[in-house]
Length: 254
Image 1 (cartoon, rainbow, N blue to C red):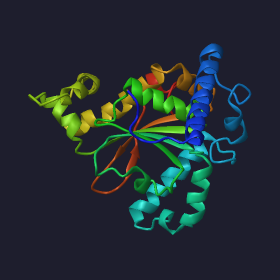
Image 2 (tube, rainbow, N blue to C red):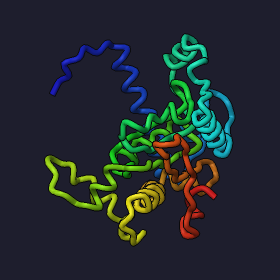
Image 3 (cartoon, rainbow, N blue to C red):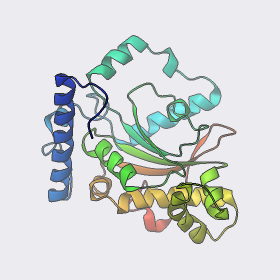
Image 4 (cartoon, rainbow, N blue to C red):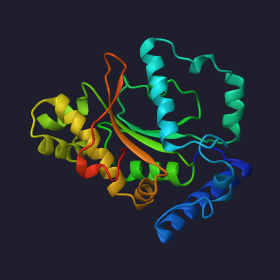
């Protein structure tokens, strides 16, 4: 089916190039079992995470947690940066340093929570912050092509998706399709407290992300990527890094 939106030759060429770059990077990762700048497309090799700046996973994670501290204190700085410069840079490409898998809840504005401007975060959102094939593919793109250095899998307090999965009500449409991915948190936690299940869900989704993606797992094992489960408190604005069970420590943040 053809698109109803007009697409210029330049836009079409750009889309084709981006797709070739992504497929090339992912194919190299699959064949080699790991990723390196030598095997990455030229755009990635020339512009490592952060638009040319060399950042480590720990540095990238520290940046967003420092931003959350400013957000909690009511002293954000992202809005004070020169928007014209940010827009001009964004028009040239994107070089995010951190990926985020967050719930789609309207009370979780990810860029605001981490006090980051346009272009610093690669954000995927879905109710219940669950790992679907589409979410995993998106974050693989962020890791393999864009060079993000950390991924935060972030649940939040009072999550409606978690509560619904626990109650398993009759719901319209395809809403119940979310439930199977959340239910393991209920079984593992052995709790009927939504707050406990929500925390467990973030940890399980972080582990699932790594275990389901050779691309991401290879980067984690090589120390080039950090995957961190976290919980956002909608009342205080604080992002809490969640404890990682010993069985997951070799694959997630230490």
